Length: 333
Image 1 (cartoon, rainbow, N blue to C red):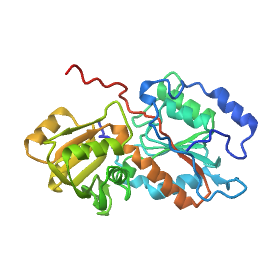
Image 2: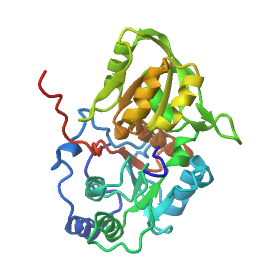
Image 3: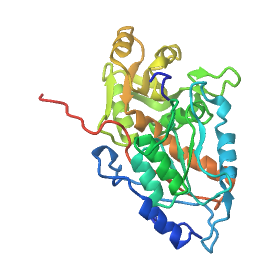
Image 4: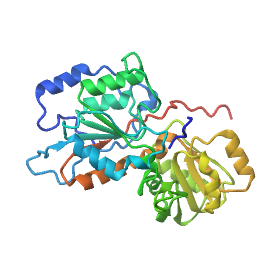
């Protein structure tokens, strides 16, 4: 979530012509996906998979339009905020889709990964073109992304704030990743369906301390240079947990109203955080924006596969760390 201001075999997809593979390799002009420190991979990459793949190894032919329709069913564009840009970005609705890569950010290293893997579609959480543009020349990073996607036949689809409010959505996946169990309810329910909405609140299976919960968050989310930081008494008892994937300081009041002992989110700013801490509300845990949204990718992958049917697609969750921050130094102690 952002405010308005603000699995792997590496082989060719079945049925791909050799000339297509060569064209993709020749067109790959991005830097290596691991050449930047912030793009390092977490220790356990997600393998490509296709549940129920036919014994002959072939996959049925699926049109991009069918995949787009399935994604719209899971994450209807009508659920997105009015300022958001969701749905198809590139791709011919009539093209075949066999391989789908899921990623938080459609940045250069992710596009390179998709091309190298011969992916037909990237499903990304963050929009590539959120603000209005007057051109997509390859002289800009976004323009180069568009050119590389189109020249290599890779479609791009984004599910952003419509995935934030979905049931299940981004915050559900975050809550489960850090050990929240049982029923989850939105922090801010949608007017037309109280099961949907921004953020989630639930409980831990047993009481713990803020220090232990912060450590559990660090274990449950992929490592980043940003890390995980907390505000509050380390020994404070934590049972009820509120979460919001991505930037969530707009929900600080909702977390307090929900009776949470701790609120986990990202991009907490200094003044809202300090003022909130002074009011004796929930403790705060702040993690990297990318890390709090990454758990949703596996959930979206699973739901799309279930909707289209077993063995329909080969899918993969990108493990490239695309968080903006690449270095963390705590200084002299």
